Length: 455
Image (cartoon, one colour):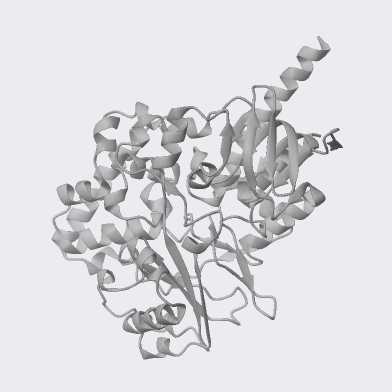
């Protein structure tokens, strides 16, 4: 790392964003021997991963929380950084999709199996790297998930189930989500069973020390190469390098890795401006909306009896699940408010939101849920430099217009973030894949330049 005559910092690669994607890219580049600097606008590292630690050191994830055993990149990193995982307890769910099929009317059960089979066929046809090349891509992308649901599901029960799955898994309303984006997301995550299954599915394991701790430890390996409170306002770029103008400093870099959500990347001034197709694509993507709520109790009473038969459509939250600590000392439930309800309740006082969540928990689990020993929630809509969660999704008409451009380099600028992932788009694993892919692109270019210089 050097200093130019004008006082700016000179590095090989500047990484914008210190979430798991940006930190993963920086780690790979640093280990390859390049000078790296990570610039993070927020006061902390982690991005959409954030851990709250209780006084006794027990960790609870306010952001991304789960991993699956088949997620090789994040599993490897967890082991490398000395963290541990434990199995997610399969209780405390109001998710209709988690209920046994035997609880459904036989006709409803048959309809649900038919719809899952139809989705499975459509998912198999998706071109994962390039969704625009999927058969009937334009038709699938022109329709919202809401329209598809009404055309393919007759049962009110199953329509509610479908809505709940969309809001739970994607934190967006079916009307705002294209069918092609849904199919792409499902294929990327291993299909319906991948997103719904707690047993060896994408939500089967938790990190005991917390996902936010994972980012903190990863940042620690980079030391002073990570700068927080350092918002990038402007990027002056050419084919051969860039100058990044940030809070209190200027950075000259041969390559740049952008590892921030699309809805935040468009807030940065690029000179020259980015290609119009890319800019329009990033402008049209919508970040999901979610509030994550934790309620703590003396004992895990929800494990002792089945949940009350309450229509989830009448509840504030879309899903709950057992959030008890690994050692069992802190019995807890976590509830997720997603989509339009999250936007609505984001504007309400936290005390009112707390009361509403507890009252609905009591409807599902009984009166004991009204009396927690502790409660906190995290509204991701108010999170600076993120503005929602879990990821940015495409409304109708966007994905077929070149969604794969999100991961294509723009001159010296490379793009990371979970939205650019091919596998596990929207997941922590996808964010890490995207960061490592962007780092590999940088290394390929810089090694090629070095070979040319030597030749």
